[in-house]
Image (cartoon, rainbow, N blue to C red; front, side, top):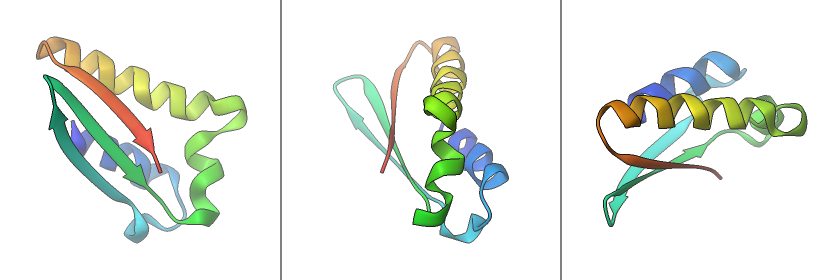
Length: 75
């Protein structure tokens, strides 16, 4: 899951070297934290949060195949 979020984020931003993705597991739930450069934050969130919502939907769909719960946090 971490690799999926990282690949999507790097393709959206101007500074792909500053994309940091970490993954932790808490009570049968994967928590993926995405951090990008402040100048790229708008590109990850999108208008009215549409891109962030789309990223979360993609990751949750991929996680459903593995019977896991995933939370994507944008820091």
